[in-house]
Length: 146
Image 1 (spheres, rainbow, N blue to C red):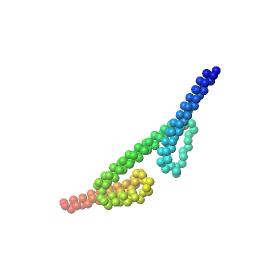
Image 2: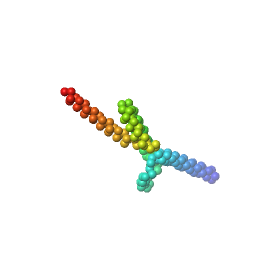
Image 3: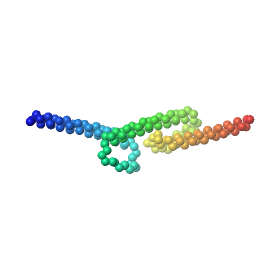
Image 4: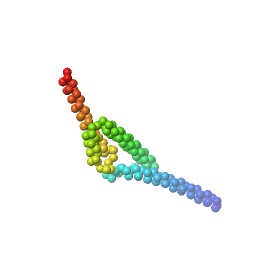
């Protein structure tokens, strides 16, 4: 009888230890997701309704995957914007580069690459307009030479 109870207690102990391990793993996943979510500015967002009976682990995995995707996309954006600015610095006039730096200095210190996109878009439109003016001037000069 004692041997049977001892085995039963060992089995129960192992079951509880497995549950504790699973809970610790889930807690670790949750901490990781919370740290990543904390990086986002979600103060103004309204929480969505949560359907009953959904699997917490699955949700955490999906949230973690989405945050990893976001991180990869932001890294790609940073790389492309850096490459774009490098090309601009090679070919642009000093006045244009000064204007770019001035516009960027208006951004808050915590502003990231995404906040720079409207500035870069506006400056790209300026370059496009200048290119069009140069083409028209070239056509006018070419027409005068004929």
